[in-house]
Image 1: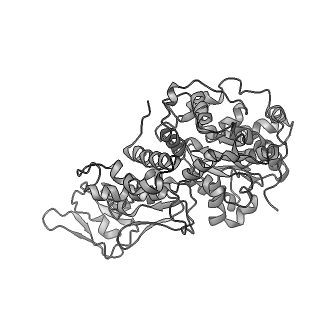
Image 2: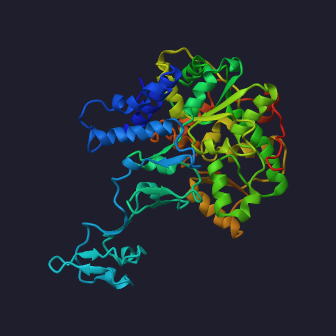
Image 3: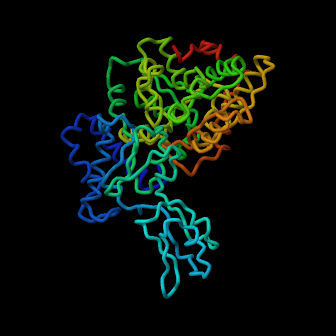
Length: 484
């Protein structure tokens, strides 16, 4: 039975699956304007102030499901009618204020922004004078003053979120890493990624692609679809029309083998697997960009291997990551990966075809090692690199700094810049916990690494060595550099 973690997840599924179903049936052009009323019937609103606003929000979601604003290069867009419920934020006095006599908050304020109620002596902040420095909050002995931030702004370590004059959140294109944390954090679903689900339907329906459709699975598939077994998901994908299923964990094995060699030769390295982390480095620490590994990501490495075997291949990647949609357009990946979908979009495709995947028989995949599959969680890449160095009989000692989330990455990069990093390899993951915490995961409560561990050990995926597994598949041991 399909379940949804939040109403926002359910609404997104309803829109994506309806758009995909109408497109599959060739009726989207005539039915598209009816979708908001179909999803929000009647005259009584369930989620917003009125039914018209609910339908306006759904209409914007439909637009994003069809690819969004082509003139906006960002993969994330703010749904304006949905973004109106959050306070502006900043320094605020809470009900914990005791109206004390010391008035340390006022003494700490250099802008004379704090006054006191003449009866209860409680503090008040004049927002026309306040500069949100937080000095008053630090001075208050009762912790009664807080620096409130909107959820989207609070989770963005890149500082890419601001507000316009109407209080609508704005994403700064020059700072945004496409990590998608803001979309996952917004309690009103006011930020969403653009979908390429219609492109997926095109690939699946085009008879010219028969026999050449490849779906590449992110290793974090093991923590998704809690209402069905992973093998049933495999079967459902073949039923959708994908001719071949390949684990991106195979690409992870290839990348690890090459990256371990690169690390031992250079002596210090930043990982290249997470495109949001790579963009974060290039935008904020350009002087460290030369330290980024020259390897392709596991997604691109897998797709490149597939196209070397089948030049007619249509390669589609599916995972919990929004920034992978950015990666597929980049020069070093674009020749190999044709399309990126999220797990949310894959689930919507199942819904569009009315599949009950929990009733299907189980298929199997066995393309990768335990280490390749464990790339999905923070620390997985570091463990794999250590394993390959061992297999290569290298005397080089990897000293990884495992970063779970961009805030942790930021600290490590500052240390690297100052030559105080307590290690020689930064494993940068933009999402908390690694890919299992991706913004387009079906659930953000099930980030248990133990679930990923159990999936990584499933069936016969534990091969004698990473090198032997790569050779078994015929994949290359040394990946070409991503740099020209």
